[in-house]
Length: 127
Image 1 (cartoon, rainbow, N blue to C red):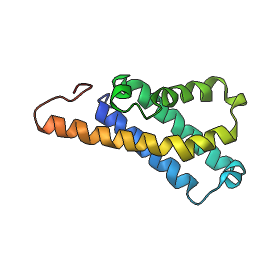
Image 2 (cartoon, rainbow, N blue to C red):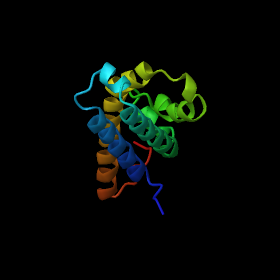
Image 3 (tube, one colour):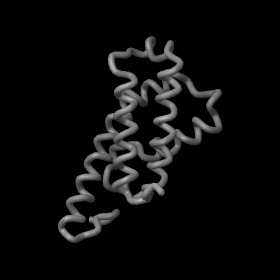
Image 4 (tube, helix red, strand yellow):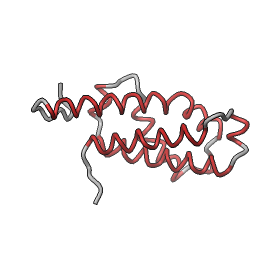
C-alpha cells in the first residue's frame, strides 16, 4: 500500500517531474506537439503530480509561495474533465516554466522534512 507521508508524495512529484524532463529533453514546442506519445506521457505525469500535490495539503503553499501549487493540483481536473479544451501550448508552457519550479520546491521540502525528522521534529507543515 502506498504511503501518504508528505515525503513520499513529494518524491512522487520529483519523480514525475524528472520523467517529464526526460520525455521532453531536446524538444521544442513543435516537436512536442507533433509527438502524440510524448504528449500522452507528459499528461499522465501531470495527473500523478496533481494527485500527489492534492494529498500533500495546502501547508506547502505557505512554505513555497513562488510555486504554483494550486495550478499543480488543478491540472488533474483539467486533464480529467476538460481534456478536449486543453491546448498543447498551455501544457508545453507548464513543462518549461512550472514543472522545474515545482520539482525544485518539492526537492527542497523533502530535504527540510528529512532534516527535521532527523533532528527530532516532525517538520510537517510547521516552522
